[in-house]
Length: 588
Image (cartoon, rainbow, N blue to C red; front, side, top):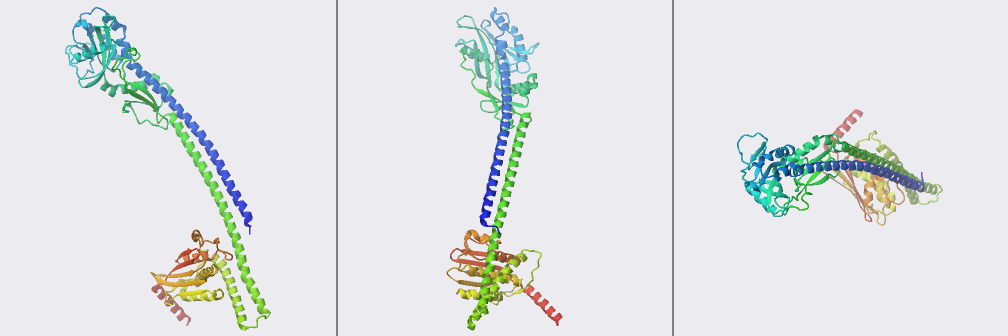
């Protein structure tokens, strides 16, 4: 037997070691988590850097392209040359080569226009042969160039009126946004004045950008050019990066918005829809200058190497977490198993102490009563009978203790077959009360019995059922306090015989009721005596007979134990009687 004082330090030591091991694993897991997160963070930072560089590169390309017509055409020396000369017979043809070159290099100008005061006519328009404005008319005649010239445009007067209103500001450039024939346009024009004070406009040359066409085709074409150009295809920083253009309302204009590959934040760059260089007009900003902000968004693609690295980091982190969790679970199970072993050792220690006490008490009583009788100190026959009764009772108590120890081993072995006989419950109760007549009388118990002889028979092991009832009654006697009452009643119904034993003992705390049928368990108010096997054997006997056990208890008032056993059916009873008659005839 291991003393409890030695078990307690072992339990504390095992618990402390388990806590220390779990803390170390948590620290290792945290260090690994930090390392993996830093690795993933560096990967994501690199992805953000590459996306940002790609966004900057594309923004620069778009800005150069959108400012190219103003820089290469409106500020070209050729335009300065033919606008400074005396007006030729037909100056529009001098601008054809300049316009054709612009159409070939840039896709966004839909048309150009030229107006000269000296000509005294409306502006002359220059269209693309393959993409004419919706409001243009076909001038007819042969077309030797990819440029269509129209000097009778229906929007010429409206355009000229807008430019004249802008000329009141005496600016070298006019930037206008308007709607021509239901289509939104951005107009960029260069104004030439006849005098240094810019009082009178002499010549106007500019271009029109169809904003609806630009939204549908221009930026998607630029994205295709960007990723097919040698600059992007050979540059590692732009590989695996997706680009998209969104308008000021957050609506996708070009590219794909289904780009998220991981938790990186997309790199965004502001883009103004201005087909001119704002620095060239910053000194004298036009009132209609475009202020709406669009967005260029870049983010790593799903199939990029960086995304694969981030995925590997997540997988490593997940494996590390799983490994740490398994280690913690293993240590927890080990600590739990160690605790279970310690609890079992405690239960065994208590069990050995209880059994030793239970054996010593009846032996001491039998010895004392036997010595008294042997020495002849009792002259009265009635006193001798009382002492003999004590000896018999204690011997039965000792026998019941031994039976409990043997029965528990026998009942827990499923290979042992129990005898099956007919049991009369009333006789079983009477025999049990007879075996406990001495302590019941000595303690002054009030016993109430209501077990009719007409109850259905129970089919089972008489010895096991007798041991079950003995343990229930013994517990009722053992745990009685001030009042000594015992009530046993039985009823039948629905094919079941219900036996109810009620006492007025100290009761069982609610948190212990579910444990009292476990082996070696003894409640905190159990007091001295008892092995912790009585109700465990009772529950096993009832289970083996296909019955039910219910325990109702209220501390300070008493405990009621209800046992339900299947009643013997009439058909089975007839078969048993028939078999008994056959055996009798064979014996005769």
